Image 1 (cartoon, helix red, strand yellow):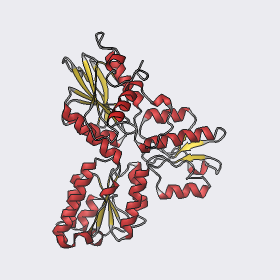
Image 2 (cartoon, one colour):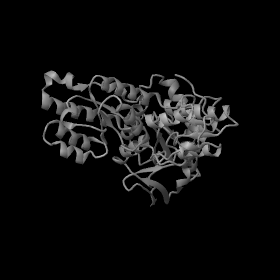
Image 3 (cartoon, rainbow, N blue to C red):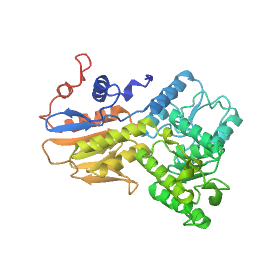
Image 4 (cartoon, rainbow, N blue to C red):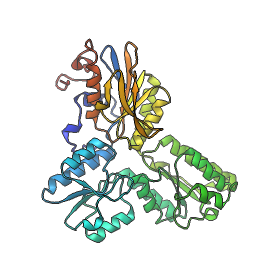
Length: 413
């Protein structure tokens, strides 16, 4: 697998030691059991797969390359490169300016740009109309395009099925940057409708089966379909693609549900005429991280810490998986973990940061489930491990706890 040039300050002596050991003993990544770092009074159970994925490392490499290669030029990012505040803040400190917010709000008008400026396209990709506007100005949109290859794979599949007269169902969050970009590309080839989850897919299935009419569709899917969408004709032939950071199992369940609805309406004998197989568009990293988290949960724990940016879709799904089974806290870094008595964390359901008292389990030992999203630097997990270990004067030294993973020359300090 390709090795990316990622700044060393994103790496972690502790986490890298564990990852390298697992890679050496399980190069084909078949063993999903968690790694356990045993400090005595507390044990960290760490997911087999987590942290920077291929697309994120690719994006980071290109972004820092843009900075190094253009010391005398203005450098802009279309929006957040990835959903991690530490990465984006570091880019800002290096002079990179952001043209838009993650929701698409314009921060710097495009007409202030010149053809001499450098614009980095984020890992989520760019909507077609935005790319066209930048190109009209004369900006090179290809030199530093960090669009994730798996996002581009979804676009190619949308193009393929659209060209075959299928409508495109996008499983995603309507206003997420990636979904907005996917919609813009897909609608050039066919009608598009977005479903957020399995519940919305069931609503769409009612229209497919003829149980609800067009008025019902337009009411329930307002602002989630392409211009000119006609449910009477555009729901006869479908293919499902996804925002790559959604739950892979849910994407499959949505595809199965809509396929079943088409069978109900048109019969199983002719189903291939009405439903396109798009299963090969699922992002491998999203799938691996979610499977590893399930294995981590099955191994048990007293409390879960999931680390990442609050607006990170893939991280939020890991939180959802964990909180079904144990107390779970979504944190962006070690600074939010004040003490065993207080932790600041993000409440996914209330969509706001909150503080929980007496969060740390009173068990001996304490088993801490630890994982992170695909846009989270391993260094942030390292800081959390060190902070919590420091609460226990009788804890094993880090180098001793890492002995099962480390070789003599790469043991952590």
